Length: 415
Image 1 (cartoon, rainbow, N blue to C red):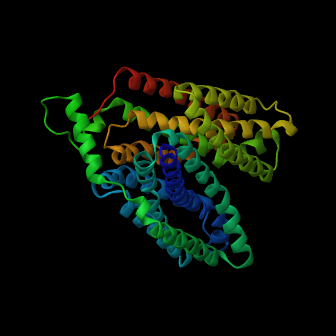
Image 2: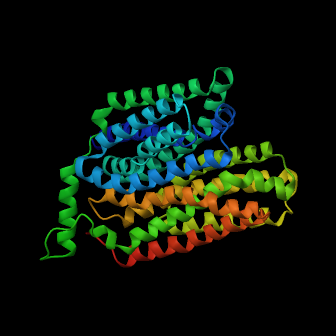
């Protein structure tokens, strides 16, 4: 009987993770439907690259704001309706892009896409943490992360392929159709995406009462007083700033340092993403096996620091440059499930939507600001500082991770 229940629970977990991961992969897909179309948009409207780059900054800034706010909505009305609205907004964003007749319609599309993208982490992690059995959580985080990398990898290839055989408007329409099909799949599986809001609220009150006997009910905003929450935010800010810096400028930096063609640099970035996807799968196993996530994080990012500094020297042989990129990608992927478990440990009971909304908004702000800073280094003809800066950010990640782990170990903070 027990074995049958375990198998049924595992099957249920697989179906739930599949639906959530499909949605997560689609959000990452929409991160990169616009940049591959920049050459077509430049030819059609005569925009410069600064104007086109500003569209991505708008996207991530809006996503940051929405992500911080949507967590409160998830804790109030539940994750499922917020998920459906977010996916629907991505469909609308792609349709808006496809009908653009000038810059301001593209801005409108970027704002809509940012609103849609901003809901995913509060929704995803609330559902994972409350629908997946604890023994399977590391694997759930792993699969969830892998689909993000798949979304990143698929979008440029899909958009360029469609635009090449048709045009950029058809490419955006095709992206809208893909996202609409995903919305349909989520709707068909909607019964598996129900989370009990009242139960989560009750757990929050029970946790607060146990930690603070005699006090009234906890405030909706009480979690903002927890230092561990803000340290997790800093962790994600540094992490995404480093990743976005590489994604944005590694090809240009390699051109200046090693005289490699930009196409080769983009190839290395693709391999970095594949290394990240493989690392995620291994990271899920390691996170389940070892109970100290900060140690896994330290080893991964220490390895990445060494790789970044090696690239900055300009001494890596041409045929070996691929190795640091694959290692960096694998390090990021291996660390991710341990990172997610660490954030879960820092999250007060019943406040997952709010906490994940705030914490993961650091990702969007890091993605928005990082290209501006590293772009200055490239403009100043200091390409080595891209890799040195990435190494420095990853050192900050290690220090922040240990600080969070120490806080979790020394003082659990239910609210």
